[in-house]
Image 1 (tube, rainbow, N blue to C red):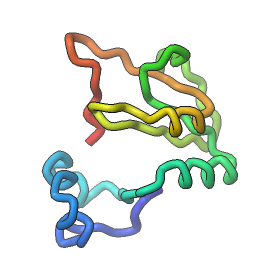
Image 2 (image 1 turned 90 degrees about the horizontal axis):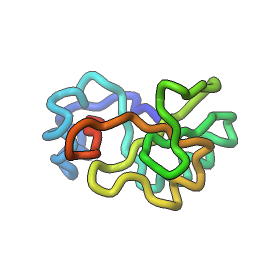
Image 3 (image 1 turned 60 degrees about the vertical axis):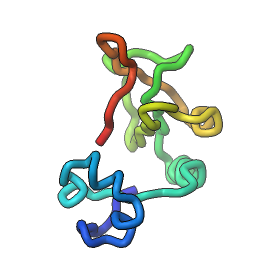
Length: 110
């Protein structure tokens, strides 16, 4: 879900300064919204006809190059350290992965 407007002075940014730090200013130009209960949003998006796709390395994930999206599609990204929880993964219609080179297998979404 996209936030209608945001600015550096936003109360959320003051409460969560990490967002501002890792976004490097992008939070001022890219619409965004912080959702506390992701599962509720995913359930609503499914009701609205969205295909829910986890971007995560799982046992059943496929390469992003083989992915055929349906419209509309919502992509779900987890945190760098923990990824997506099992509760969120079970709500996804499919999982795709982006290959990682090197020793680290994390993607910085910011």
